Length: 81
Image (cartoon, rainbow, N blue to C red):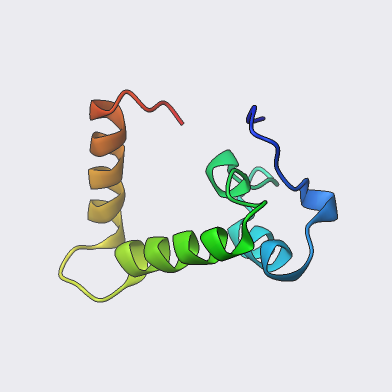
């Protein structure tokens, strides 16, 4: 759980609830990076639009290649999530 106050999954409504539902992982929950934006729905909307454009938008890289770049950047930044 993040130390930042977030909207709990069971209480999420509107666009936050929709983003949570679309972002639910195979382990049954929503990643904390998404929850960290939940108190500002407009920020969460912008984050998800950006993320979907980068990861799923048109381009020559496969999704696997894009994910590997994200892993390398996170490792370089010592970000362990």
